Length: 299
Ligand SMILES: Nc1ncnc2c1ncn2[C@@H]1O[C@H](COP(=O)(O)OP(=O)(O)OP(=O)(O)O)[C@@H](O)[C@H]1O
Image (tube, rainbow, N blue to C red; front, side):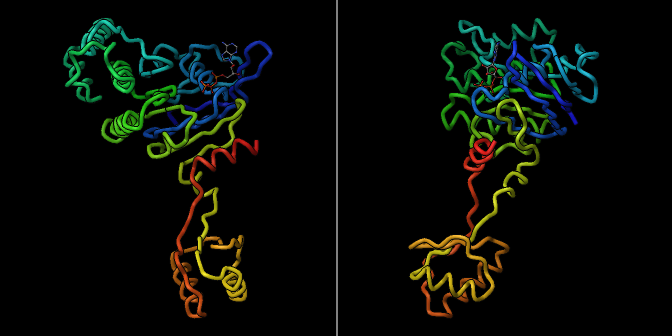
């Protein structure tokens, strides 16, 4: 595990905002850390970055205890928390060169980072004139200067337009697939990260509601066969007589729990052979956003 916390808890005065959190972030993953506003994501990230002191529980990063190995661990993490620290009056490239000098990183690396985040064409434009998405990419380039193994990003897609979100998504996927990084990214919108995350942790009120691979999150919601037919009552009776479970019957359509593609073909044949008209039949799965709302509401 690249990040592993055990029973991590944190309070601001008497408000417990992180509750016994046990994060498991595997190497090479894009871990989506999800929760509504105020769930405790930023506080958790500040604990991981040692910007807040751990009160209860423990944090291991790269297999080492954070408290006793702060400097070596932090030197291998790139982060973006809240707004990136960018000098607006300098160009994107000047911002990178300035930081590179402070960190004793070569100028060659600056050019590589500009290419990686696709800001070469805008390298000599003032950062103050960049779009929000360009600023976020510059922030990621700054975080990557030292070639860290782990990137921790707090809501980097917040406020971006759909194109900006796609650019960040493609960049992060490239970093993981081609450059072997691990990315920990928070968001309050599942839809913004579901297409890039390999793993997710969902928190609400500081406590973990779900953690696992994104495919396991999908499997929590039972997919349905949606059947649109001319007589849903007759169709439901026919299916029940043939040992299918019908979960919902509406005027225009009915639902049967999905088991296989083969089953869809069999249901279709059965209905048609018995004189019913099937207008459409397909597998439907709850959208992850609805699932996220269900999980957070239930808790
Ligand atoms: N410095 C602070 N002092 C007191 N309370 C704080 C402080 N920072 C955060 N909190 C409280 O801790 C709780 C968790 O906040 P946090 O910023 O970690 O949530 P978040 O999930 O990152 O939310 P958002 O998506 O809105 O950034 C909130 O109730 C917040 O008001």
